[in-house]
Image 1 (cartoon, rainbow, N blue to C red):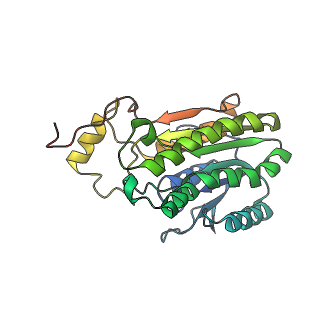
Image 2 (tube, rainbow, N blue to C red):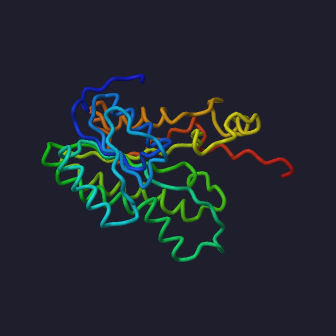
Amino acid sequence: MAATYDDFRDRHVVVTGAGRGIGRVIAQAFAGQGARVSALDIDFFGYGPDEGVRQVVCDVTDDAAIEAACAEIEDHDGPAVALVNNAGVDRRMPLEEIAPDDFRWMMAVNLNHHAAFARLLVPGMARAGGGAIVGLSSTAWMKRSANMVAYHAAKAGIVGLTHGLARDLGPQGIRVNAIAPGRVPTAERTPNVDDPEFIASTHAMQCIPALMEPQDIAEAALWLASSSARMVTGQVLVVDGGGVGIPLPKKKGNA
């Protein structure tokens, strides 16, 4: 890791959607800073717990499960000083195929739990002297990517929630920010990461012609949650290699 923070040593940090991919790397990054990490996910996909990381099964679409998980992790490790709301899924479908239940599920898995975890963990965080909340948004809604209406609504909603929570929780010493990642290949979800066309299309949508890594998002989360960012709140940090504002590359055969 590029930086070391003393803020998290022997302190409790909560990361949702930490069973694999970006969330797992974020949990590992905080553990590497000496934190006691509660990693929450509905499934850990065969990964055993990493050093300093305690796995807690939780369905973030289930309000009762969230309440039970928050009570259990606070009882086990005390109040959290940092909460990283990472859980989400980018299920893609055109508008005409989105049934009401599909839309509600997308809001639950991508947005609603951000507010639920904040509501339940903020009281302990405030009693402990404050802390930080980091939510994972996306650049997809900024780029108007196709067939992602529900995902866009949720990820844009995270930005609005971030603004509102930052204003309301600031007096309690709690900062709230969001990260908007661009395309981040992961071993579990990007089987074509070595394909030359995939690499070329990724480079074309960025200013920096390099593939991003989950660690790039983890470094941003560490900084936003640390005292190095003590006066940063209500912000959205775009981590995408400079891709926002660059038109998506055209597919072969398109005009």
